Image: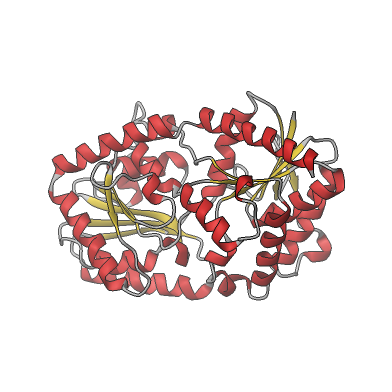
Length: 390
């Protein structure tokens, strides 16, 4: 079997959970099937990259995406299965399936109807991205949801989809990448005081990740808790300005220090922050699974997270960390709940150690990439059977 993986992100341009997923899935898939990777951007040695057509260089981002997708369709005429990741490549996968008469599989990392704030970023392009996703999902031979929560969302947003075509295959984690190295990175070089316990946020500056909730909750953290925010790349100027203001106010009000790392760090540096943190905080308001929680757990760090989407399938409340209920109509209660759990973990180092150890055990036993690759290939075979019968 020869498979074409269509993805916006591929190393070195990986900035989100979908990119991390593809980066780690492909090497394990290649043990089982032949895989061609098609990505956005400049030439790669290990993938076929497709740039935005020159004629669309000044167009809306959604139109640029469709231009790249058409290039991918042209380049996938010799494969048996096409597998797209996120709306950025869903139309490429859909049209490749039609053009070449092959099954199209989608991995659902997020859903446009669950992210209305994207209209701030894309303008009219959000209507295009929503149409792309709905059209591709309606015709896909199989859809892989990265959690049971995501499967429920898929069927809720798109009730016309046959539930038998929606399969759950969780995201995975590369445990080795988060194990302590022979020589630990000095986090002081990142501006962090290693002598103080700190609460860590890692994520893009987007409404989905709840960074505003984190900043308001952080104002309620114990005064001795240092705050480290590893966040960059705002979706659009408004949330960028809001985040700058919120972090500036925190820095002015907290004696323990607030460190904002406003740039993309390499994985070893982020892993060092995870390992050194007293607690990792994930305040997402929408999260199909939440790879960041797996990363923290693989680093033996306790997690305090919202109870949205697939997060409860990763973080076991009271065992590997704590879940805090998110209600869009009660943001203050959510922020107070986050702060209370963070303060509890930080004030009891023994508890933090116990939660962190349980988290690493769970990440290792439940989320290995080789198992996920085999489950993915099983879906490919299922999709081929569906395709032949339609």
